Image (cartoon, rainbow, N blue to C red; front, side):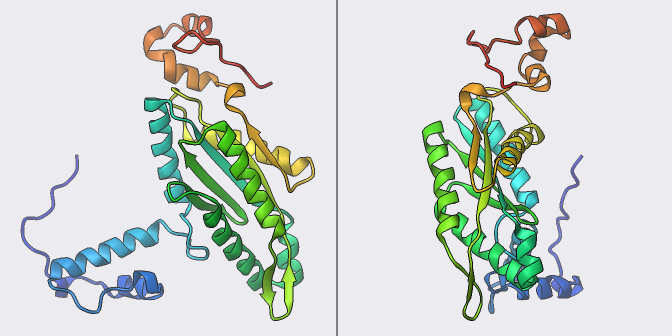
Length: 261
């Protein structure tokens, strides 16, 4: 049960806000206002800044993994309720370790920042670009049909391949990325883990088949796992596994669910 906030106003002089101010002061975009009209307004600005800081990757400015999971869960809920298509892309910088080993970690950081900025330019404002971890990124594209998904993924790959990254005065390098993607099963309340795993499978395929390429799991060939079947049909089966197995190859509308082996 959630606790109720106290009725009395907060006394700012009794709050230990030094650490919060120091954290926000390191990012000019999150700096606290020089003047505020009230203690409430000041405290709200601190809270807003800390919330944004907790959801942002400090190096690239992209959504961090925590925010990525929140967006993924929200998108899964949207797909389950509306049936609108949504695509998850997982992207990995090819041979990134070689960049760090050859040019140093500052050069590696510059590559990550440049890739992050480029990804943001390649997608719509409604899409979410996140740093998933290390040299891996993720993009959630809601309301994304198959013909658009393949186009955007290829555009990202080509844009990264064609750009030159300044890592030091007079020194430029080129990189490539591998991209794997999967569409969320329409009308199925999947899970973030299952959706991410599907996209990861395609990313692994792109890496193992030569890198600098795109592989997407198409909407028509999505595999619906036993766990997802149970999420979709379990409340109708009343706990009868045989009943679930009997309709495992059909959607609620009677269309066959194709499988990827």
